Amino acid sequence: MVSKISEGIEISVETFYQPDYSNPVSGEFMFAYRIHIENLNNFAVKLHRRHWHIIEGSGSQREVEGEGVVGVQPTLQPGERYQYVSGCNLRTEMGKMFGTYQMENLHTIEKFEVNIPTFEMIVPFKMN
Image (cartoon, rainbow, N blue to C red; front, side, top):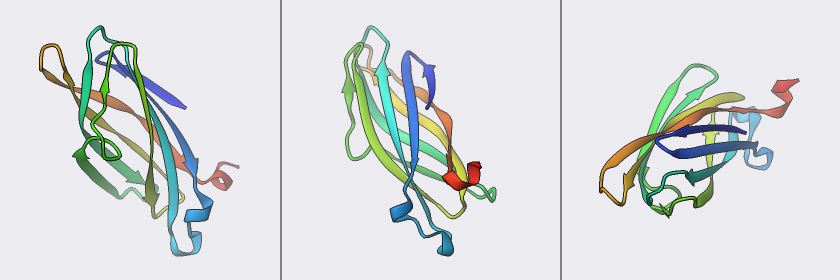
């Protein structure tokens, strides 16, 4: 698991290779990732948007942007945690992701960016 604190928000990420949803012969590798978001601030925040950078083992890159996470825009009170699971498909046996969340301080109505730490997705047999 990797973790990072930025702007008073702690982001932790775990990744899981999904062999049942992958087809290595066709160059399809599916990964799931679980994200824990914890509000360490003394004010409530709302997650508005996500922006991901996905880098394949071949060096090719793509970006994904959108509202919320898994269809919701969660609000976190001080000390509250939120968790969700999502997925990423790669065309190579390894890759990495990183990005940002756009959040709002619900006290001042100011928006700010939270950094998501870089995390790797590696097919287990490649790690031997």
